[in-house]
Length: 238
Image 1: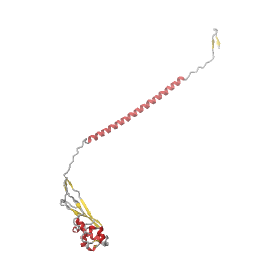
Image 2: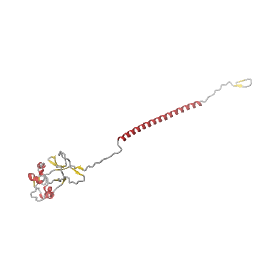
Image 3: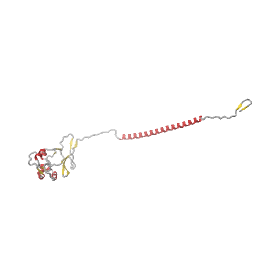
Image 4: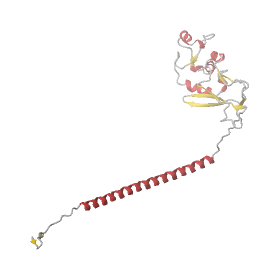
């Protein structure tokens, strides 16, 4: 320390002045905040762009679907007009009846007596089958099917020959009224050792050139009707 003539002292010692870093910290914080703000703005901008893109795609899809709908809508009529026509006549359906046997017992035993014999127990047979025992039963004979008779293995072959001849049919096996115009069609189904005979009315599979029979609406007709007439009950079938 020096002292001049006026009595003023001068210090010669050195002093160190410390400058705080507060302002530097403030500047760094402000830069980081700005960066965060930029990121937020970028994210918001990206999200907004994404929403705009999704909206444009959705709008484009709706426009395409609307155009397709309008094309379909204008391609077809909006109103439908139905016209119904009712015919006064209609085709009568075909009717087919099939019989395992159409030969009457009486006719068969008359022409093929070797395959018929009297029931072994006539009283018991007539009690169980009264329909076969009407009238005089002294000369009653039935085919040798093994039912109250001996069995003949040649019986079915013998009856098969009679099936193909209409004159051996049991009379009135079926009824055919006079108002039916088309002839009956006869067919056979081979079921060895026997056969099945079928009759079809209004069938045109084997009747070329014939037109199907028709009937007027409201017209009452008697169709081809199967029945069991009294003649059948009296003659019996095999």
